[in-house]
Length: 194
Image (cartoon, rainbow, N blue to C red):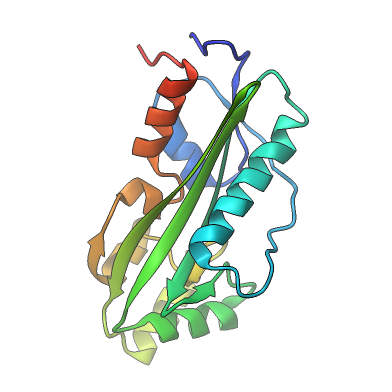
């Protein structure tokens, strides 16, 4: 496999959804935990926050693999300008999902690809409308555990598909990694897919 001037491809994430999206490309890569704090200054718009965090993750892994091409990503849900991150527990997941029911919200996914002499950071956005779920439906969905590790307290794969009235945008970005952007940027970096 030709990675251009880079020795290998590294995903700065241990997310199973992001790994599955990368596996779909058929390129060899390794997944490494970025081990960074996912904190930004209060009041930072979600679209800016995901760019900062995606680049922070990519740079942290790049420091360990300086001859590799690193892919970092981050995601936040924004409801009326208020960011929703990953809920720490089931009660927080329930509160987030209850706040989203019957409403349209944005989800921002940042991606940063960094290697020797190469840095590109971009943000993808999508709009999702959650059905007007009943309390029992919210509780039932939270009981599935799919909310764990997911901004907004939901996952668009699996059973989460049943909570949306409308999804507008790149589905791979909503799942955690905007693959159309990723493949374009990788090509710009010199990666050959075939």
